[in-house]
Length: 309
Image 1: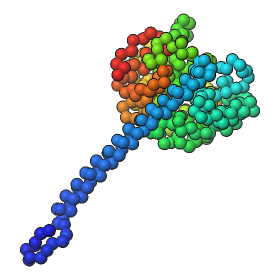
Image 2: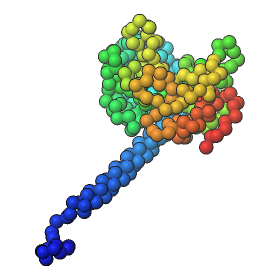
Image 3: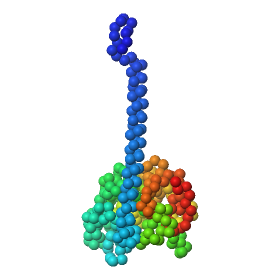
Image 4: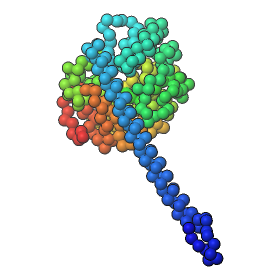
């Protein structure tokens, strides 16, 4: 409180004082918003890691029941079964407390045997599973319609397929965890389960033409045929291209608006993405460490892995 020139008490701020107060409040609000955003970012990354840990536990429970990881074909069944028609994420539904949804999927596989029409006939193809969604991608908490008008539920996570050089038939040890016809037994992962990547992050593109979690085959009726937009619930890294392990586009920052970024692993987390390893552990790998992705995708390649920490 101060006295003016006429001896009267002044009860209001001067303009300069008001501007100072507003500036201080602006700085405090900015700091608060930044802190809130940092907390949200850290929470999303932590919850995403928890999703992958639960996924790893489910995959090992599946291994305990079938003596191998998915995808795999059940030797006790034949014809149209979930093992013939559905993705690895569908196969582990009983292991994430989604037994009723899996039973529904079994029934739909019997009733609707066309594996390329799963998106039309199977009720589960539009079921959102919170565990399959990175918290940093709020788009996926409800089914979405892709640019072809197809309604489906999506996942933030993909397994890893390795395309080997077909001219090298003895190159089998360099295959990845997600093989097309039969899953691996843990004893076959000779590089060590703690050195082998199993599942990585890849947000579905803006047009949603990739990232369905439910079917093994994705059919998009266009001129390129049924395989034009499939993921197999997994993303392929090519061993036929010797540069693929060191190219930045195998793993690096991405954009959902980019048509090419659906073919690389990336996430909405700053500076890197979360990965599930074959032993069930989860690791955040920075984009600056992209050189380790190639050696870590093969199950028995014998590569030396540097810069792991």
